[in-house]
Image (cartoon, rainbow, N blue to C red; front, side, top):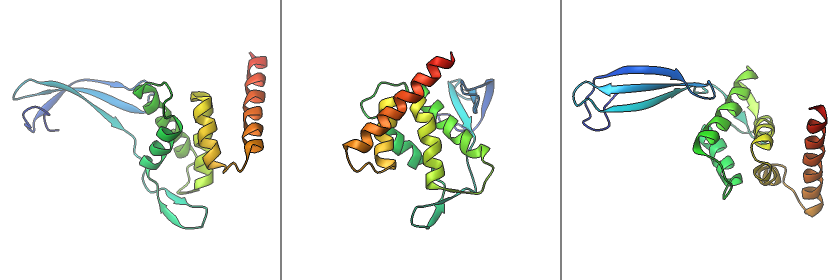
Length: 158
């Protein structure tokens, strides 16, 4: 690991702990030359996952596409960067739990929407409107009604 200040190659790990979402490790490091302290985060990377698109074409899984879609859906919404990273980690954990080497873009989209609905309902509607290709106001209204119904059911269970 290179020191971000002096670019020296030798650093030592001072402390290691799990990230809040427990999907990565945060390491506190110190440069052995200039003694500068900095943190690094080590996270799981999804490898060997193929995404089958709606048109049947296949491409390797790309984390950045999920991040871009979420950022667009959550544009001008209030959230912390840490909570956003946790959301992405939870989505990727659910993708990994499928234990499949190939998923359709629809399957991934459903996982994203399931996690996004509990994270930010406005962001969920925005994402769903693109993902489910709402054609009119009626489609939009039905989805909002579904959210309200699920929310009501969850409150009744408590």
